[in-house]
Image 1: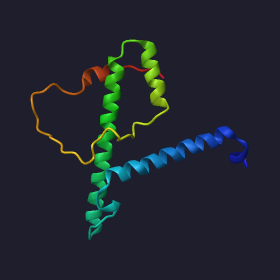
Image 2: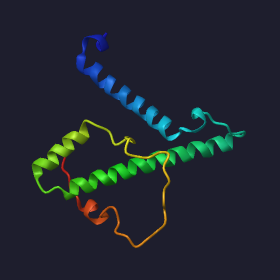
Image 3: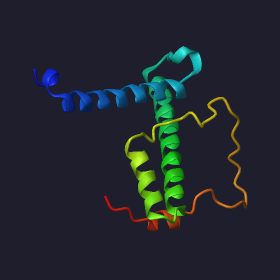
Image 4: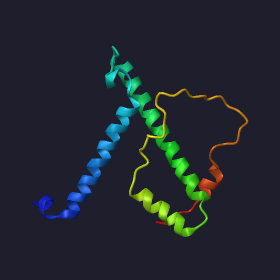
Length: 128
């Protein structure tokens, strides 16, 4: 009865259900091959495939966190930082639309400038 009578409770539950659904969509987007079916003979092979999917998902989430942290650390204005943080509070870092899942990736180490200034990111202090 609380669920029916308390609007904030319903909204909180709906928000959590949306997060779960988003995680399922994310997993499906990463595991696009073979119609999202495991076509492996042994349990060990299935576990390796599942672990690879988790590794890819975690890599995308890490990249998103680093990218967002870099943007916040580059922002000079306190009001702009607060605006960015408000936007982040209402969204999720579990997003993948900017990732080319069918792309070709070059992991060759070169002397190019790093994508993220980790020292600057680690020095970033955000009070909640």
